[in-house]
Image 1 (cartoon, rainbow, N blue to C red):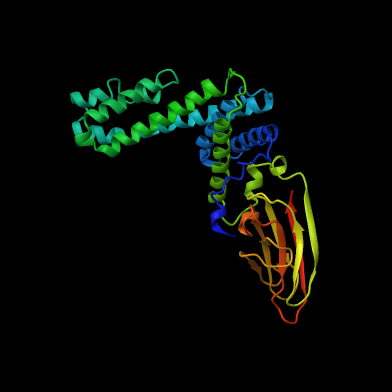
Image 2: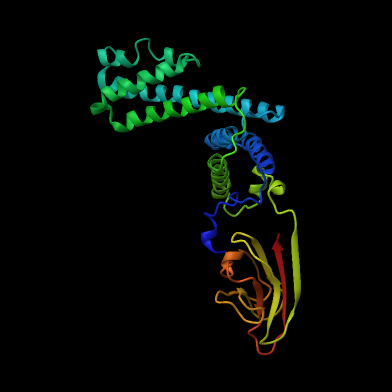
Length: 316
């Protein structure tokens, strides 16, 4: 497969209706929440939920809403727990640097570690502010990495807290039908697909765990098949192709076959994709030629002796 296809946003097409994208997005949110090992998809859940509600408004489906509330609460509580654990680990650095009875140590821990271990949702942000401000004031001794660590913990917690309070509750507003908002959702969903793929290289079935493609696959397809004599060219199909239209090519014979778009039904095009015997390949129409000037999809058989056997599936 041409590696340039990986960055292509598969959701950026008018062939996916708003309603189908909505269902696809909602199911993706539920699936990420249900399959989130080690909270690795916490940010993805927030990003998709944010983009979804920005475009469609409040989520009305009760099952989806409940799942999102539960998932966001888990993500937020996990963020708070990580902050507490990190403070407990790093307290030794502050104590070792300044001494437990020093004024500087008291700036960080005026009530000892207990104040942090007992932190609640109501006090967490205040304690995080203290750690960041004191670490920043003493960055020369504690290092910039120390400041960055607690700054990131604070940012992560606030993002998850905001997602729970502002997005997962009764989000007000009507659907805003703008290209920019839909584009944000399309990009976030594509990031989700690529992230799952990155985490599951060699296991393509993992995609089905997170995404229900039945809502976005083309409603229909057309299949062409036949034979092509030695050293001959056969016209398979003729239509105005779209650049990202999917076409699956099959070489069912024992010799090589070449496929491409052409301006003429009896001539090979400038761009050719060659398949070895019994090979199949899925491509975009634009990979076969210039879709603006070439409407004939042709197959050529370069073998001087063997008859070719082809099949082509065009997603309509």
